[in-house]
Image (cartoon, rainbow, N blue to C red; front, side, top):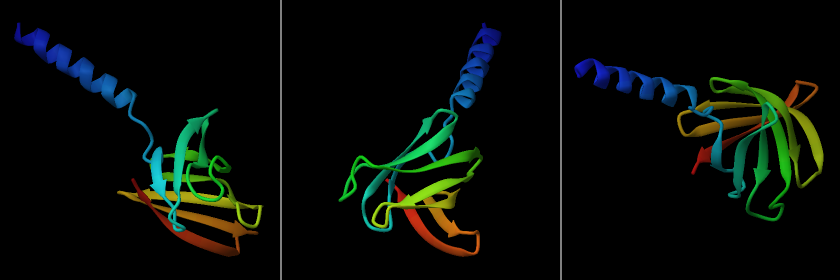
Length: 112
């Protein structure tokens, strides 16, 4: 009887770990105060604005694991795309966009 409970608990724990999402997935408050949603899409993570002037616009695609991601970020106001990266630390996400990996701008987003 005890073995059954231990086995069931172990299976539930392993299943929970297997289905755990990446730290970047979720809703984030941007530096401008808008809400961005980051969700899995085709083997990477798509960044889409849900509120604000550019609501509904996809502004990035990032790939990676364990809190570190790289890809492309678009500034919706300038309609320019840059090489980008994101690093999750707790409830903060540091998003960085760079031109030629030299001129970079960083913003910190907060998990909602």
